[in-house]
Amino acid sequence: MAEKNKGGAGKFFLGAAIGALAGAIAGKFVSKKCRENKDEIEDRFDDIEDNIEDFKDDIEAKIEDRKDETKKSVEKVEKKIGSDIKEVKEKADAVAKTVKKKTKAVKKAIEK
Image (cartoon, rainbow, N blue to C red; front, side):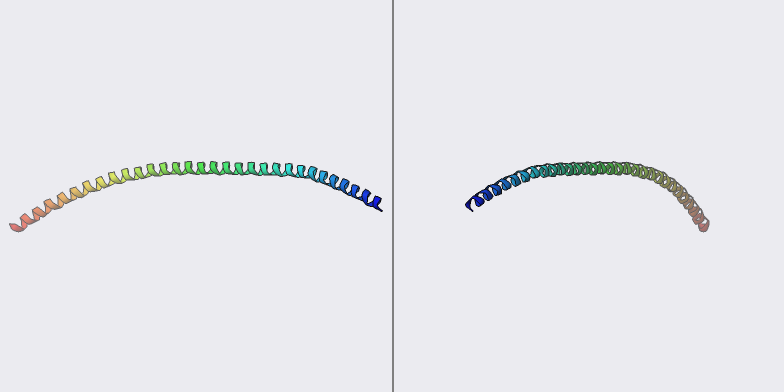
């Protein structure tokens, strides 16, 4: 019976060694695959980060373009309003002079 146990223990340790070796080999493949997956995920995150940065740059450029366009439009409106205001002021001054002359004429006519 002692011989059976001795043979059984040897088989157990041989099985354990084979199992450990198989586990180590499987672990190596799984570890390699996990590392590849991790690297792939990191690459995808880098791509996403680059895309976000490009999108941000595009948006900033568009905002800057719109800002320049708006500034030019405002300058045109200011110029137009400025010339319109000048024209209205000149007309108002002319009307004021006319009213003043007529007021003086009416005042003189009343005094006579």
